[in-house]
Each structure stands twice: as structure tokens, then as C-alpha cells.
Image 1 (cartoon, rainbow, N blue to C red):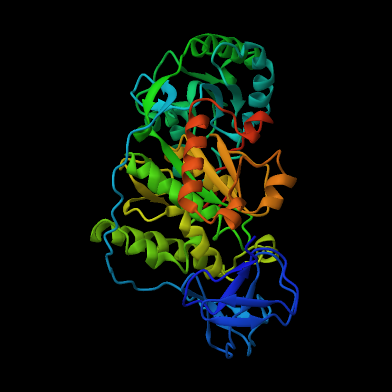
Image 2 (image 1 turned 180 degrees about the vertical axis):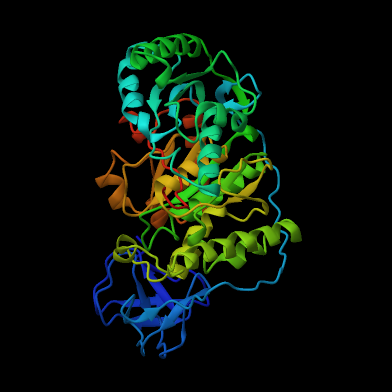
Length: 493
């Protein structure tokens, strides 16, 4: 089994693929080095002497600068490396014009909705317009379980704390996200549950929804009924009876939209799990499908790699705006742009935001960037899209679902039980996690340490995604987990 890896020939650090002991001699193409310290799995060690102020290079790019002199064989981490990131930057377009060649067609068994969109689940959703009716929504979810029948996968309430006491764009984003979910093709039927006096009440929300199937999308204002629970249960019984009759049919994989996200990353995420997802993304794009990469703060330090893959200069400019607008968001709240990675990331071997970002962006594969989406905006271009959303796992995954993703792929080196509004496939970066948390993990990318082939693993992941799209439950679904969170961006009145 491989013990360590120098990812790029220009790197002056290597990564331990398993715990390494001081005294081990590591042999890489450029020579050999003897470890002077124990190196935890996923962490880095110096391949040569690195002077204070000199760039520390991983993935072929700087991930920071040495705080002090680092000797060959020494552990390289937060104690002796600092970020090299600055504030808002100017960028120049250096197009590389990547090409993903078409491959043979593939299909999944999904649900064809009346508006032509394809879903991979047939669920009944309860969507509150405001947090004031969350308890009602949760009680209706409980009462409605007896109506789950036929092809219905789940009856779920997506509670949240918003819809009132918000201003300007903050309220607008809430309305658009709720409308996106109401229209989502994974929902065979939807009960929109309002209070009546909230800012985003049902009459206000309806124009954001646009056209809807009146048979399958129903509205209930709690203040209009003496017993809102009895009325809500009655409506849910009717909706469930309709959705239960839906049947799966063959649908071309070009209609799949898959969100790409990572969280609780470790030093192996950028070596195993994220390249596997990148290979998957290229494969789906080669079949005419769509992927969406988000969590903008975890593009900082690797953003030029995405910018240069923009399909044209207009898309490049949108990518520049995506990055700098998010930096402005940080600074407008007096937050430090590079206040990342998290304690769990650091424990797993990630040293700086550049280190994290260069690993995270590998989920995008090598395809051209065809479009850049604002938060709450839905996909219109097939291929690789970028989406404005924060790094927070549930917020970003919800944003991916709202953008149109029927499935989310989530890579992790630390593990998490969370879910999102759509099936969320958990991909482990290491074998220990995959075995220890088998109740959370759906796919083990840690085998790449032995197999070393992201393309082969990407094909296996693609096959799994087709199974999930055709009805196979992911671990979180088996546990009944469904999470939902809106990006709070303004003051609360």
C-alpha cells in the first residue's frame, strides 16, 4: 500500500497517506528525505528545506508561505505555514478552452413531471412560508405518514426560520429559494403552508413560483381555518393519493443535474474523494448532463483555475464577480476573508484556505465553466456551472437543490450525518471513515490510495448515481434525514 504521495512534480511537500513514523525514508522522483517527526495521516512533510517566507507548494501551486525555516523531513502545518491570500483582486483571462468529448448515452429510471422536468424522487413536501408555522408543519408531517403509499418515497416538512422580519435582498432570497423548492421535480406534490400575516405570505409568494400544477401544489393559510391541522391533513391526504400513482420511466442521463459539495475535509480529500467527483463530473458532462460547483469561499486561492476554464470572456467576468462579491460580503461584515479552514479540517491535515481550495475545486473536473449562477438562481445551461453560496454544508446543499440539482454529491474526510432536500451521497476520502461510519457513508473513495485511478472510481460513482437516481436510497434517506437551510444575509427586524 502506498504510504505517501508527492502530488505534483513541483511540490516541495508530500502528503502522508497513512500515519508515518520519524526515521522513515521517503523516496520521491526528485530524491529521498528522512522524516524527522511523526506525520499524521493526511498531513504534509517537507521534501526539501523551505526558507522562512518561501512558498509552500502542493498540487503544483502555493498553499501559503513558511512562517519560519522548515527543514527537509519536518512536519508542515499551521504551526509553520501561513496563508498568502489577500483581499479583492484584479484578474486577467487566460483561456485554456478545455474540451470534454461526448460519450455513449446512459439512462436512469425517473419521474417525468407535467412541466417536462425530470425528478429522481417522488415525495410530498410541506413548505412553510414562515417560521411561525414550523410546529404546525412538523405535526402535519407526523400525521401524514399514514398516507405514504404507492410510489411515494417520503412525506417531509422543510421547516426554516425566515419569511418575515427580513428586508430587501434578504427577503427576496427567501422567497426565491422557497419558490425553487415548490417547483422542484423531486416533489410529486407540495403543500405550501402559510400563516397569513407574514411578509412572504402566500399571495406575495405566488408570483415567484410562476406557473404551477394546481392539482399537485396546494396552499393553506392557517389563520383562515379554525382547525389548521385537520384542514392540512385533509389536503395532504388528497395530495398523497395523487402522487402515489406516479411511475418511474426511462430518462436520459443528460437530464441529470448533480450538485458538488464537500465538508469536514481532510488531507486526503483533494487526493481521493474530490478527484473522484471531478472524474464523475466530466463523465456526466460528456453525456450531456449538468453539474454545479458551489461554496465560493472554498474557491479562494484556486479561483484562477476556474476562471481560465470559462467558456468565454463574459463567463470569465461573471466568475470574477462571483469571487470578488463574496469577498466584499466578508469584508462588509468585518470578517477575515481567509478565516478558514475549520478545526476539523486542520486536524485532518489542511493547513490554509489555499490548501483547502486547491483540493475542493478538483470536484469540478476539467470541463469548461458554462455559466455562473447567483444564489437562488436556477440552472439553464447544461455542463459545469458555478453557484454563489457559502461553505456551510446545509445552506450550500439547499442552494444546490434550489438551483435544480436532483442529487448532491458530498465528499468528506471527517464524516457527517446531515442531509439536504434531495438525496445526498456521502463520499469518504479515507477507508477508516468509510468503515467506521458505514451508517453515514455511501461511497468509499479512500480505495484510490491502493487503486490510484480517479477515472475508474469516477465511473463507479457514476454507476451509483444512476442507481440513486433510479430509486436507491442513500444512507441519510434510510435514516429519514432531510435538512433545509436558507442563507441569512441581512438584518432581522
